[in-house]
Length: 177
Image 1 (tube, rainbow, N blue to C red):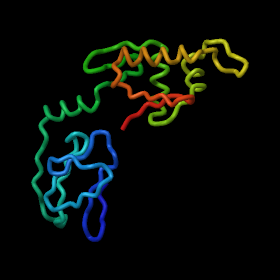
Image 2 (image 1 turned 30 degrees about the horizontal axis):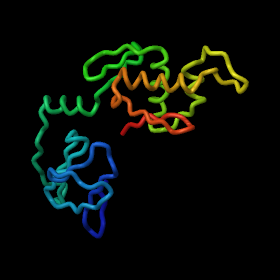
Image 3 (image 1 turned 90 degrees about the vertical axis):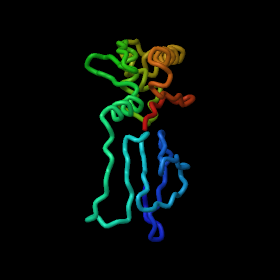
Image 4 (image 1 turned 120 degrees about the vertical axis):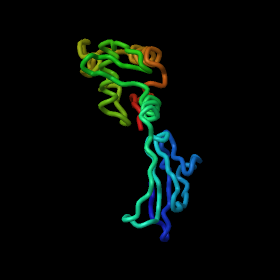
């Protein structure tokens, strides 16, 4: 975030996953950093580069284009995986991995609710619709089965591919910037 404070532009990193750089130095999150003309601000590991200036808009500054090779490598770092929902496959670091029906249902549900808690009951209804229902009308799925599915996903796709966090006693959250 850049905001005006007492006639001065001030930069704040709002706790982003990849951090913010000011003139090549990573800034401390949630700490004000006064900006000067010609400061260089890098976001998303250099994917976005801003040249800051107090000069009027009718004056021109020189910008340095990022080479296509640099852009490709930065995109690879930022997006270590991609999902083809129609083919039900995930590509992780260039390797195609076919998703099982349960993996697909679970990952799709969490992706559709990114950064939101998905309760256990909703996961059971979505991922195991074919199961007989218990007295409460929920599919008969044990917590051991659900935890085993999450374990298999982390193992198969890599524990850092999908940032799945368990919320004790409640459900799961897929965390993504």
